[in-house]
Image (spheres, rainbow, N blue to C red):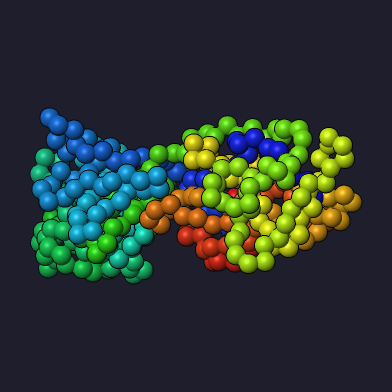
Length: 373
């Protein structure tokens, strides 16, 4: 076997966000339109009305901002936090005519604890200049169409915190507006996190096919897929992972295998590996890159055997750290693929790899196969 020397930019040590693997071979639907945003608090000297049609935290006493993470917004245990974005309907003219009922039935969120997170639809009804207001809320974990009111609905039996099917609540709001020959408008959508028992992460909200991700978009990584010349000498492979960066033996314990260079004069012709060995090229944190798995695979990765069948029996591995939507903290897994007889790892993303640990949010458990994406 020959291990080609590769530059640090080819290392797959960190991946950012999203599903890393998709189980099986079923077609994947096109993702909804997505935007990345980190909500902001209402700036000093301004009111919520000034920034209502931007993403913003509620300035209400007792509510707090969330802590931005690489994969979402983190709300502390026991805290209350809510953030919404207006659609322009809070003025004299209606801009967005999407119905409350349609919005309510087309909302989803990715969060680490759906039982503590609530969808919100803020509603004006009545007449401009004399609007009445309520917010309709539903727990993200609730699959029914039952929503709750934040304020009483005028002229109806619905008091604060009343709950009913969304169609019934909308009918009551319509009737209250009709009584004064007025209008009904959804003026904002958003989320409420209510006193979770543990830290809760909210990664994204999808409303009517538009996904808002509550974190910054990953930056381009600039991967260079040009391999350097030459091959790794066994003298350059350390016997353990006491220092992770660089080539090293990645396993410990009894019955460890050996590795030795096959040399012809000054040339290194290959690496003879026996027994239990895991030879890795680790990289320092400053060389960790975002989203570089597809670029690495597209660039081509090979284990060179002489003859070609010498590659049989090896497993190609990519250890990685990554962040997943709806999962708190950095995650880790190793993707593994048995090296084909010709030593060449397929460059497309349809090949099934096996993961050493479950990948949150991707539907792939430990030791299950899926395709990188």
